[in-house]
Image (cartoon, rainbow, N blue to C red):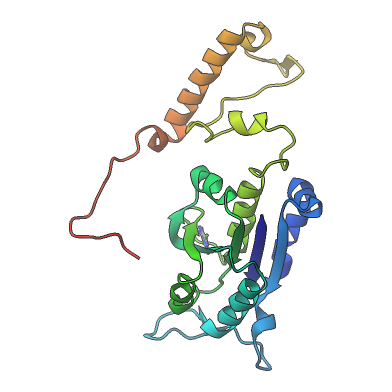
Length: 244
Ligand code: 6GU
Protein backbone atom coordinates (compact mmCIF):
# COMPACT_ATOMS: atom_id res chain seq x y z
CA UNK A 1 0.00 0.00 0.00
CA UNK A 2 1.19 3.51 -0.81
CA UNK A 3 0.57 6.22 1.83
CA UNK A 4 1.39 9.91 1.30
CA UNK A 5 0.97 12.49 4.04
CA UNK A 6 1.05 16.26 3.44
CA UNK A 7 1.62 18.52 6.46
CA UNK A 8 3.30 21.77 7.48
CA UNK A 9 4.90 19.71 10.32
CA UNK A 10 6.39 16.67 8.54
CA UNK A 11 8.43 15.88 11.68
CA UNK A 12 5.13 15.14 13.41
CA UNK A 13 4.90 11.95 11.34
CA UNK A 14 8.32 10.59 12.40
CA UNK A 15 6.79 7.96 14.76
CA UNK A 16 5.47 6.08 11.71
CA UNK A 17 9.07 4.88 11.24
CA UNK A 18 9.12 3.19 14.68
CA UNK A 19 7.98 -0.23 15.90
CA UNK A 20 5.76 -2.51 13.81
CA UNK A 21 4.75 0.18 11.32
CA UNK A 22 8.38 1.25 10.89
CA UNK A 23 9.27 -2.34 10.05
CA UNK A 24 6.42 -2.47 7.51
CA UNK A 25 7.84 0.68 5.90
CA UNK A 26 11.38 -0.78 5.81
CA UNK A 27 10.04 -4.10 4.43
CA UNK A 28 8.18 -2.27 1.65
CA UNK A 29 4.70 -3.38 2.82
CA UNK A 30 3.94 0.35 3.20
CA UNK A 31 5.45 2.80 0.69
CA UNK A 32 5.40 5.92 2.89
CA UNK A 33 5.92 9.47 1.63
CA UNK A 34 5.80 12.46 4.00
CA UNK A 35 5.65 15.86 2.28
CA UNK A 36 6.16 19.41 3.59
CA UNK A 37 3.32 21.62 2.32
CA UNK A 38 5.59 24.68 2.52
CA UNK A 39 7.82 23.17 -0.17
CA UNK A 40 4.94 23.98 -2.56
CA UNK A 41 4.83 27.71 -1.76
CA UNK A 42 6.73 30.34 -3.76
CA UNK A 43 6.70 33.47 -1.61
CA UNK A 44 9.45 34.56 0.78
CA UNK A 45 7.33 33.80 3.85
CA UNK A 46 6.18 30.41 2.55
CA UNK A 47 2.57 31.41 3.26
CA UNK A 48 0.00 28.63 3.60
CA UNK A 49 -2.90 30.48 5.28
CA UNK A 50 -5.22 33.42 4.83
CA UNK A 51 -8.06 35.22 6.63
CA UNK A 52 -11.49 33.67 6.04
CA UNK A 53 -13.79 35.24 3.43
CA UNK A 54 -16.97 36.28 5.21
CA UNK A 55 -15.08 37.01 8.39
CA UNK A 56 -14.66 35.06 11.59
CA UNK A 57 -11.89 33.95 13.88
CA UNK A 58 -8.77 32.08 12.86
CA UNK A 59 -7.11 31.38 9.53
CA UNK A 60 -7.94 29.12 6.59
CA UNK A 61 -5.40 27.21 4.48
CA UNK A 62 -5.02 28.72 1.01
CA UNK A 63 -5.73 26.43 -1.93
CA UNK A 64 -2.62 27.05 -4.10
CA UNK A 65 0.02 25.13 -2.08
CA UNK A 66 -2.46 22.26 -1.61
CA UNK A 67 -3.12 22.17 -5.36
CA UNK A 68 0.60 22.03 -6.17
CA UNK A 69 1.35 19.42 -3.49
CA UNK A 70 -1.53 17.12 -4.42
CA UNK A 71 -0.89 17.48 -8.18
CA UNK A 72 2.77 16.61 -7.67
CA UNK A 73 1.96 13.55 -5.54
CA UNK A 74 -0.77 12.32 -7.86
CA UNK A 75 1.40 12.79 -10.97
CA UNK A 76 4.11 10.69 -9.31
CA UNK A 77 1.77 7.70 -9.06
CA UNK A 78 0.23 5.11 -11.32
CA UNK A 79 -2.47 6.98 -13.27
CA UNK A 80 -4.51 3.78 -13.36
CA UNK A 81 -4.88 3.86 -9.56
CA UNK A 82 -7.51 6.25 -8.13
CA UNK A 83 -6.20 7.40 -4.74
CA UNK A 84 -8.26 7.87 -1.60
CA UNK A 85 -7.82 11.40 -0.23
CA UNK A 86 -8.31 11.41 3.54
CA UNK A 87 -9.01 14.79 5.10
CA UNK A 88 -8.83 14.91 8.91
CA UNK A 89 -11.47 17.27 10.28
CA UNK A 90 -13.74 17.32 13.33
CA UNK A 91 -16.56 17.81 10.77
CA UNK A 92 -15.86 14.46 9.08
CA UNK A 93 -17.26 10.93 9.15
CA UNK A 94 -16.40 9.15 12.40
CA UNK A 95 -13.39 6.88 11.86
CA UNK A 96 -13.97 3.37 13.16
CA UNK A 97 -12.70 -0.20 12.74
CA UNK A 98 -15.08 -0.79 9.82
CA UNK A 99 -13.55 2.15 7.93
CA UNK A 100 -10.05 0.93 8.89
CA UNK A 101 -10.82 -2.45 7.22
CA UNK A 102 -12.26 -0.68 4.17
CA UNK A 103 -9.15 1.52 3.79
CA UNK A 104 -6.82 -1.47 4.26
CA UNK A 105 -8.16 -2.84 0.92
CA UNK A 106 -7.15 0.28 -1.01
CA UNK A 107 -3.90 0.68 -2.93
CA UNK A 108 -3.18 4.36 -2.20
CA UNK A 109 -4.07 6.69 0.66
CA UNK A 110 -3.19 10.40 0.71
CA UNK A 111 -3.67 12.42 3.91
CA UNK A 112 -4.17 16.20 3.63
CA UNK A 113 -3.38 17.40 7.16
CA UNK A 114 -4.84 20.85 7.69
CA UNK A 115 -4.11 23.21 10.57
CA UNK A 116 -5.95 26.36 11.67
CA UNK A 117 -9.68 26.40 10.81
CA UNK A 118 -9.28 24.00 7.90
CA UNK A 119 -8.50 23.90 4.17
CA UNK A 120 -10.29 26.05 1.54
CA UNK A 121 -13.31 23.93 0.46
CA UNK A 122 -12.39 24.29 -3.24
CA UNK A 123 -9.43 21.93 -2.68
CA UNK A 124 -11.80 19.20 -1.46
CA UNK A 125 -14.16 19.83 -4.41
CA UNK A 126 -11.30 19.90 -6.96
CA UNK A 127 -9.79 16.56 -5.89
CA UNK A 128 -13.17 14.82 -5.60
CA UNK A 129 -12.85 14.60 -9.40
CA UNK A 130 -9.56 12.68 -9.24
CA UNK A 131 -9.78 10.79 -5.94
CA UNK A 132 -12.29 9.40 -3.52
CA UNK A 133 -12.33 12.13 -0.86
CA UNK A 134 -13.17 11.05 2.68
CA UNK A 135 -13.29 13.76 5.38
CA UNK A 136 -12.99 11.88 8.67
CA UNK A 137 -12.97 12.61 12.40
CA UNK A 138 -11.40 10.70 15.28
CA UNK A 139 -14.16 11.68 17.69
CA UNK A 140 -16.13 14.54 19.11
CA UNK A 141 -13.33 16.81 20.26
CA UNK A 142 -11.03 19.27 18.52
CA UNK A 143 -7.34 18.79 17.70
CA UNK A 144 -5.03 21.55 16.49
CA UNK A 145 -4.41 19.80 13.20
CA UNK A 146 -4.75 16.58 11.24
CA UNK A 147 -1.32 15.10 12.00
CA UNK A 148 -2.32 13.11 15.11
CA UNK A 149 -5.35 11.81 13.19
CA UNK A 150 -3.15 10.74 10.25
CA UNK A 151 -0.88 8.90 12.71
CA UNK A 152 -3.85 7.14 14.30
CA UNK A 153 -5.47 6.11 11.00
CA UNK A 154 -2.18 4.99 9.46
CA UNK A 155 -1.53 2.78 12.49
CA UNK A 156 -5.09 1.38 12.56
CA UNK A 157 -4.99 0.61 8.82
CA UNK A 158 -1.33 -0.44 8.63
CA UNK A 159 -1.71 -3.12 11.29
CA UNK A 160 -4.46 -4.78 9.20
CA UNK A 161 -2.13 -5.26 6.21
CA UNK A 162 -0.87 -8.81 5.73
CA UNK A 163 2.36 -9.45 7.65
CA UNK A 164 2.39 -6.26 9.76
CA UNK A 165 1.05 -7.82 12.97
CA UNK A 166 3.07 -11.00 13.67
CA UNK A 167 0.14 -13.13 14.85
CA UNK A 168 -3.03 -12.50 12.77
CA UNK A 169 -5.03 -14.22 15.56
CA UNK A 170 -4.55 -11.02 17.65
CA UNK A 171 -6.69 -9.18 15.08
CA UNK A 172 -9.61 -11.57 15.62
CA UNK A 173 -9.93 -11.33 19.40
CA UNK A 174 -9.39 -7.61 19.96
CA UNK A 175 -11.92 -4.88 20.77
CA UNK A 176 -14.35 -3.93 17.95
CA UNK A 177 -13.52 -7.01 15.83
CA UNK A 178 -16.97 -8.41 16.74
CA UNK A 179 -18.66 -5.08 17.55
CA UNK A 180 -17.97 -5.48 21.27
CA UNK A 181 -15.21 -4.32 23.61
CA UNK A 182 -12.55 -6.89 24.46
CA UNK A 183 -12.83 -8.93 27.68
CA UNK A 184 -10.30 -8.32 30.52
CA UNK A 185 -7.01 -10.18 30.18
CA UNK A 186 -4.61 -11.65 32.78
CA UNK A 187 -1.10 -13.14 32.89
CA UNK A 188 1.36 -14.44 35.50
CA UNK A 189 1.52 -14.41 38.50
CA UNK A 190 -1.78 -16.05 39.52
CA UNK A 191 -1.84 -14.00 42.76
CA UNK A 192 -0.66 -10.34 42.82
CA UNK A 193 -1.16 -7.99 45.80
CA UNK A 194 -3.93 -10.25 47.07
CA UNK A 195 -5.73 -10.19 43.70
CA UNK A 196 -6.43 -13.52 42.02
CA UNK A 197 -6.79 -14.35 38.36
CA UNK A 198 -10.43 -15.48 37.78
CA UNK A 199 -10.49 -19.25 38.47
CA UNK A 200 -12.22 -20.09 35.17
CA UNK A 201 -9.11 -18.93 33.24
CA UNK A 202 -6.89 -21.40 35.18
CA UNK A 203 -9.30 -24.37 34.89
CA UNK A 204 -8.53 -25.48 31.32
CA UNK A 205 -12.23 -25.75 30.30
CA UNK A 206 -12.07 -23.90 26.97
CA UNK A 207 -15.84 -23.84 26.49
CA UNK A 208 -16.26 -22.25 29.92
CA UNK A 209 -13.47 -19.75 29.16
CA UNK A 210 -15.12 -18.72 25.86
CA UNK A 211 -18.50 -18.26 27.58
CA UNK A 212 -16.91 -16.22 30.41
CA UNK A 213 -15.08 -13.98 27.94
CA UNK A 214 -18.22 -13.34 25.88
CA UNK A 215 -20.13 -12.43 29.05
CA UNK A 216 -17.33 -10.10 30.18
CA UNK A 217 -17.31 -8.43 26.74
CA UNK A 218 -21.08 -7.87 26.99
CA UNK A 219 -20.86 -6.45 30.53
CA UNK A 220 -17.98 -4.15 29.63
CA UNK A 221 -19.72 -2.93 26.46
CA UNK A 222 -23.04 -2.35 28.23
CA UNK A 223 -21.30 -0.36 30.99
CA UNK A 224 -18.94 1.82 28.97
CA UNK A 225 -20.34 1.81 25.40
CA UNK A 226 -24.08 1.09 25.49
CA UNK A 227 -24.31 2.86 22.11
CA UNK A 228 -22.50 -0.12 20.54
CA UNK A 229 -25.30 -2.46 21.71
CA UNK A 230 -28.24 -0.17 20.90
CA UNK A 231 -27.29 2.06 17.96
CA UNK A 232 -30.02 4.66 17.27
CA UNK A 233 -31.95 3.17 14.38
CA UNK A 234 -31.98 5.04 11.07
CA UNK A 235 -32.55 8.53 12.45
CA UNK A 236 -33.32 10.76 9.45
CA UNK A 237 -33.95 14.44 8.96
CA UNK A 238 -37.09 14.97 6.80
CA UNK A 239 -36.37 16.69 3.49
CA UNK A 240 -32.59 16.26 3.75
CA UNK A 241 -30.93 14.48 0.84
CA UNK A 242 -27.50 12.96 1.32
CA UNK A 243 -25.47 16.07 2.14
CA UNK A 244 -22.04 16.75 0.49
CL1 6GU B 1 -9.54 14.10 12.24
N1 6GU B 1 -8.97 16.57 12.97
C1 6GU B 1 -9.02 17.59 13.84
N2 6GU B 1 -8.39 18.73 13.52
N3 6GU B 1 -9.63 17.54 15.01
C2 6GU B 1 -10.23 16.39 15.29
C3 6GU B 1 -10.22 15.29 14.45
C4 6GU B 1 -9.57 15.41 13.27
N4 6GU B 1 -10.91 14.29 15.02
C5 6GU B 1 -11.32 14.78 16.17
N5 6GU B 1 -10.92 16.04 16.35
